[in-house]
Length: 250
Image (cartoon, rainbow, N blue to C red; front, side, top):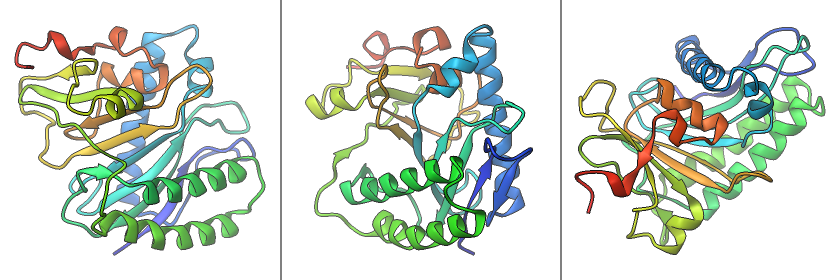
């Protein structure tokens, strides 16, 4: 059954908000986000909150098998509740597809632009919950069509981790400039198959004043110390390594 909704914290509310999503999905998502926050706090115990709140708004597309048997597309933004307790606020929209497409299209990003704008308005109190759910329902229709239609051209095709990598990340500018040369990427190396999946997850953002737009492809839902980099941008100190140092990369 298709679903769309949101989960997380908002400055105007005392606790978690959620609408429109199955409990199994919000439970799994909450586990992953709690893990990311723990790793970010561990990496930067004195400055992590500022880094978290000033960080990018991530967009994501998760292949089947990660939250449930559907594709999930969405956006996550740093937020707090009325007491200042931190937790990301996320919009999640499901779609029926056997897998994710090998690239991203401008039409999908344009829909995500609108959802991001509306998410920020909701966080600021500009929409009530019923209005926001109705808006997401309309955008979900367009997003499902965009993620499943066969495009004539991708904005860019996404790189793939090699055999002993769990994930790779790089700037969008580097991919657009040299799509066949990924030596400037960073790699999350993991020789075992634990946590890996044939169903990819895509993560990308449009940048901030201090951080260039980036993208990441992972073979599963990321957990572990390397996830601190999603909030901090400090890939190297989070356990990632330059991909040109990868022994199997050429």
